[in-house]
Image (cartoon, rainbow, N blue to C red):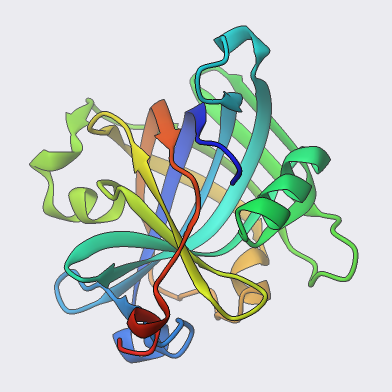
Length: 237
């Protein structure tokens, strides 16, 4: 990332499963370790839309809207709870190109639609990125209960209250970005997922267990510049 970014994350579904930590560690760079909750690593698929994406300091009306879905897990490095992205599919071709070039994020161009009606969110994504493994996701999701502060629930806090994310660049280096936002407000949620081949495209079998669902209407975010993890740190998990 050349400059810090401001944006909003809206209409999010957090769809998450417990995973064997040894299985997860095998998918991670050696400098990172799978973070654990109740002894398990966790894998998540998160559809949502970015709104008002723009360089920090520019007026909000100049931002763009970028629907997105990502596949991620949870890692720790030097005691800092963080996120690691396996893939991010997004609608905007210019945004995808910029994120791959400047932020070293594994973004893929996709055709995505997100619509809200009768309290439900309908999300459809089809990866169209040249040379990439195909991936589709089709789901309808909705909140089912009263809102709560993520800090009030240990699993919810583990899954969403993270302020750094890591990626692996094409040259094998590990990079990180810090994010700043308010504490998440979540709702218990339910979803009907008709199609999900994104997890398989990232090298995982879709877990047989029922996922844990949370919904959030969203919040505003500031993301820092991408930084390279020091070489000596990358060599020592």
